Amino acid sequence: MNTGLIGLGKMGLNMVENLLDHRRKVAVFDLSPEAVAAAVEKGAVAAESPDTLAGMLQRPRIIWMMVPAGRPVDTVLELMIPRLEPGDVIIDGGNSRYTDSERRAKLLEQQGIFFLDAGTSGGLDGARYGACVMVGGAKEAYDLVEPLLRDMCVEKGYGYMGRSGSGHFVKMVHNGIEYGMMQAIGEGFDLLESSGYDLDPEVVAGVWANGSVIRGWLMELAEQAFSKDRKLGYLKGEIADSGEGRWTVEAALEQNVSIPVIAGALFRRYRSRSEENFSDKVVAALRHEFGGHGFKANQ
Figure 1 (cartoon, rainbow, N blue to C red):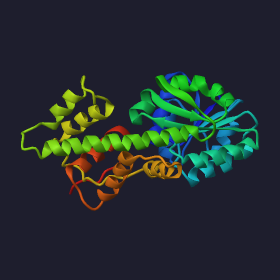
Figure 2: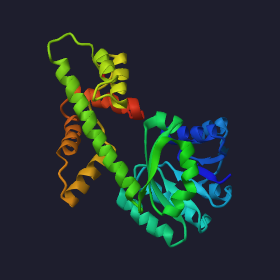
Figure 3: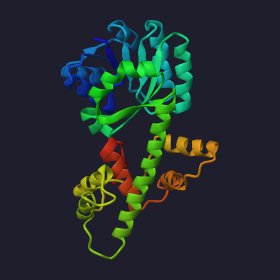
Figure 4: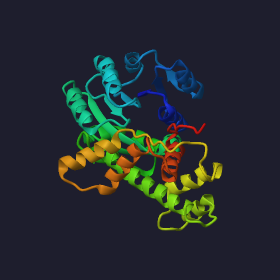
């Protein structure tokens, strides 16, 4: 066994199950004993702490982190670095800022340890049955973990993006594009809702999801959301953001690149917290459908 996974949230636990389905032995750790127990029930091996997890793995170790961006990633690295050896690989599969990934890669390089930044997409279904992963870091390390990626991802759904930071940069831009696409879908259904026609948005989304130019998973998720309630009355239209939309706009400002659609979608999310309309409900519903993101329920 040379694979470990730290962080058994919604995505992490599904990824463990995915790997177990591919007959991989996986050691796991999470701060939640319940999450660890759930993974063990599926066939994973429990570790008492991140650093002891390293001691359970054969070399070269491959350790995948699915923890929140920011300080939690640095905390895990601080715990594990003393237990890792040159040639081991640690992967950040969360939504870390690309500049943080560049810094972490340089830090681990001094110890001879590989650090890969792996932007992971596909939502909960993807984590469970086949993800999409964008990887940055040393090509040598990518080649080492490529068989793992092949098992974890859909066909053609992973790739080497380039030097450290590039995987998370590509995922950041991906999420910025996602903001714009969801905003356009939300606005379109808002216009349909106010048209005066007696339209069923579930039927419309179902037709658009099959053969139209705008077909795709987001449209399928819209159909799924409207099947629960054509007015989406079960939620408020307050749209949260993970931070990646902001980082995308900041990167565009630094690079003098015009991204008005993505920027507008980001600012719409801010406005949704004080002024609600149907388009915001659609976007909030889409986020819940693909990522299990929380929403504010209507009382």
